[in-house]
Image (tube, rainbow, N blue to C red; front, side, top):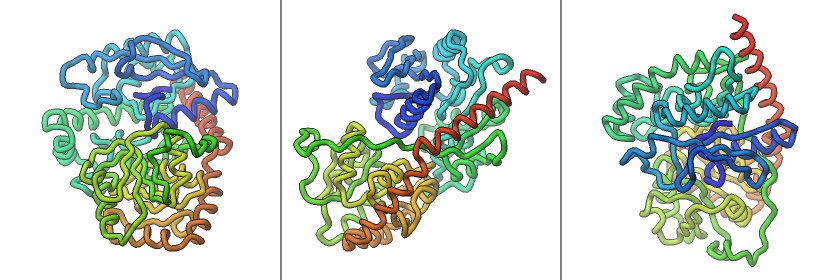
Length: 409
């Protein structure tokens, strides 16, 4: 497995990679993980995590350069190959000799060290739009993008990063795309939304394989001190980064317009202080996964008001597994997880009035909340390891066969 960060770093992709690794190991596969060294970790080290998975931390020259490390919680793969990381990965692959390298969004740094003639097969799970989008979000001027175009992408990336950095990333994205398409043995977009926006045709070299969800952690005792900050009364839950493109301002506007609403609990990194400070809002910041799930269990409902085309909707899937309803934007992968009117309510993105109406509808109808939650629980079973992991195994077999064909020719 290749991932730019891994547990104990908290995040959606990190959790997906960890869960998949554990399930593959349980089915008899040998699994190891290569990831970027995070702050406070020495590069070039290996450890066995609490689940028995070997995790290799790779050093990075890029992150020793001044002004590069802007995220205090995690390192991100740079837009161009890092020679130190590439060398460490090349040595690791020669030592372990895996049958398959399964990369998760990690583009150029993953591919550079691979011997495309004699090396392992390469599968790429696409959790974002990074194949064609420099910002990976497919969002342009606050709305879903109509599609890539170099000049537009350079301006958009310049606004998102900085003019010079954005132009460079946009150019590298455009230049690397054909090379990536040639060298990946099987693409594994996590949703139809990703497949369509990245221009991938369903074929032997591309198949949609969704994220899986394992059984949720056991409920925690009510007296657990980590849960003392949760409201005692029923509450609405939002979990994930609180940002504008995740619908933070839309949610704030909807919540502000409600009459005597229950508390709104935010679990995740908050980048919008004005939202966190609204009356009735309880901003808890990031929480370990088991505590976030406990907050979910104790909530009335979850909201996912994204204005960007979410690639999947892990929040919606975890909400479903907990037997809770969700109000979510009818956009991207969210609309592939949530069945409108059956497992939750879908509303137009960036529409605070519709969002407020759907939330108030659920708040005022306990029977509807219960029926949607029960249907959602059944829906979550379609994303269980027993259903999803065999899809990955078949994809690995496809990748290995494609690699063998390339070597033969």
